[in-house]
Image 1 (cartoon, rainbow, N blue to C red):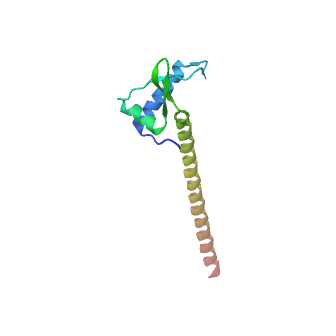
Image 2 (tube, rainbow, N blue to C red):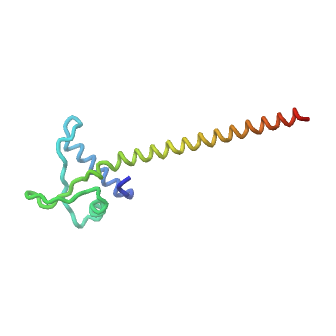
Length: 119
């Protein structure tokens, strides 16, 4: 995952993306990218800019604005993909442990039966 965001930063980024999708799309297709006012006194916005989730742009008509970066847009799909991969690894490890336990039990049973036959 390229962005390392804390919970408050993720919530703010999610809010901005939802806001943009609700206002800047038609028939679920993005029409244009929303711009948000740049607030240098907003610590959360400054953290998102520093993390790379937001970009600062100079607009001749509106002054300094903030837009969501491509890393900001891809943060949640990447996070979901990483969580799914981790879940798949955990399931694979659990299956491997289960198969090992089963193989061990079968080996013990065969050994016990061979011990009974050898008497």
